[in-house]
Length: 287
Image (cartoon, rainbow, N blue to C red; front, side):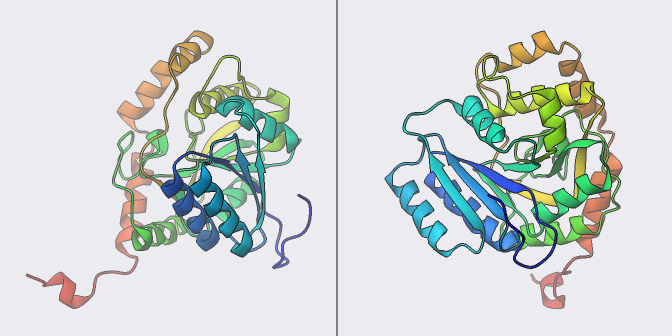
């Protein structure tokens, strides 16, 4: 998957999209990728034997028309969410990647902003954008799920986020709606632990904490926004496995969600959003 960006700008990391069963969310995700990602960006659709006939038809049509440099692979038999993604990441070697959840809807400029965030600070191992259902990176309220914005609302949020100060504060761990992962950090920390975790949600937290233990940072990319219908979550037994390996993790996350050290950052995004495309005069005085 080598090659230069068609526009002559620095090449973005490859976007990894694990294919899910839900055809509707897959279709929406692919459409948003086309709309919000620079032409020529490398995208790898990795299918762990999940897509059904309609999903395969959606993928085939998308591959024919997308301006992105896309590839699609499909296993004959499912390997499991974490093991399959670990296999895909291993195939990328020590290259930087962006993993996008299959039910996510990225806003305009999302991948460029994530890559720029990581480029500003070499200590960043993972960069996670805002999301309406993003746990510690949730907006407008920490730890709460807000309605998924429509296309126009998402575009406004993306434009507002781009104007945010580039501070890239610390998150407790990366979050699975969308995440930039620095290849060197991942290589030093090792692969995903498919033996201990069944969900990408939990395996990503574990990887984040291992990278943090090696001195890397898990940062918020406050200049990007990715929408999602609902939060990701652990499989049965994953939270217990995380707590056993990382006993300080559950109380740390609880403190973060309770006290919200990024409250000012969330407020700043809301204020910037107020200045984007204000309503027309007749809308302000509508009965």
